[in-house]
Image 1: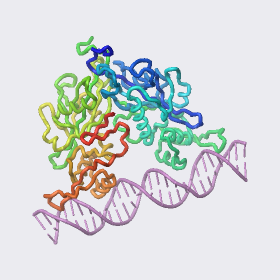
Image 2 (image 1 turned 180 degrees about the horizontal axis):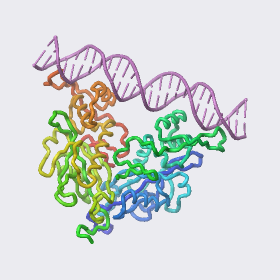
Image 3 (image 1 turned 45 degrees about the vertical axis):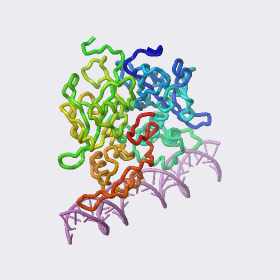
Image 4 (image 1 turned 90 degrees about the vertical axis):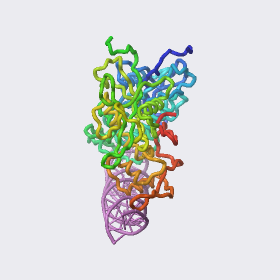
Length: 245
Length: 245
DNA sequence: GCAAAAGTGTTGTACGTACACCCATGG
DNA sequence: CCATGGGTGTACGTACAACACTTTTGC
């Protein structure tokens, strides 16, 4: 038996999480960022990777994802959804087959205000989603897929809520959309799009202290149901998760 | 330690598959059906369940799904895609936690002509998708989710190809859509929808022997790329799979 | 008043739906 | 020639992108 083998007769199971947030970049605009951890052992020693770890036997899959999100950033997820199970044989080239790991990957959103105070150290850091280095394992592919899902789901769900506070202006909401989608949106059409959706309602309050005309503050209306997200969708006011009931 | 326990310190990993096909029902129309196996041991002894089993250590996830599809029906999948990983603690009520199983579920399409000759026995049978009995574990929920994905994906992909032969009439293609979606479609608009998509092209041949005007035969054009299915989509002419590269 | 952002109105295009209609074939 | 399904034309409604325009604030 090879020295690296652990003698397993079945593939090991791990849970990893792609943690997204929005951060203000030097030029002043919001950009999408994600949390990575530096590997300190083989394989891929020294490369950055998605946070993750083994699944405890008494722990739900989504709980494991939330746990390793917390262990990495000291934050709670504002949104959490299963992404995909990655288990191909070639995802850790050079490793012994008996060390094979199947990773069930989740993706999460954390509030941009909270993320600003999240831990950042020698081995944990935020990276711009569009400027990633070469990552360990198949993690570049995983992030690419997570980005694709995030962008797709943004339109017909209230995902943007995961990045914002309780009350927000339409300009802030639009900024979230622009950061995630990576392109500018027409303010006029954006306003109508949001109004047509119906999930966002005006509070009557206005945001004071701006340089110009004070914008109205809006909030998400909890009573409005979303577009059909499938049988697994559960609407939890605190954490919305795609986990099965 | 409880007698049913296997002494595991980590959850076991299994792969299951929702196998769809179209079958002609007594009234003459096509209906969506799926393959189930009868459980012959606890828990849920005697109930019908999705076919599945453990993942071999040298086997890709999709290969395991294709294998248990073959072991159940003696067929090859015409389409195969990962559905979701189900791993909640409460999915096998009454079982010991140490017997916990995380199931990575795939869904598959098999040709309706081939399925007609597929094995069917005391313990393996086809069920109408809209008339399912109470299934073992959380399998009713899983099937519901698979149905939702199938219906959603049908529109912006060439999924229907999985049910049909190489050449087909637009009426046959429409019949597939109607069976999957569970509602009738306007033939005129359906024709235009398919034409606009561009993935289906006329062969010039006609289907002879009908009672009335002979319809033209069409085929899928392999050179046309589909709508964006995300970074994991791979277009294999034989088996299209949502598995990562 | 001027700049800048909030917010409204108008128009054109694309697309899905409903449905009237013609065409070709077997009986 | 007639019933039936194949196949075309047309009109309407909704959704969205583009962009001109008005409103309200700070300076």
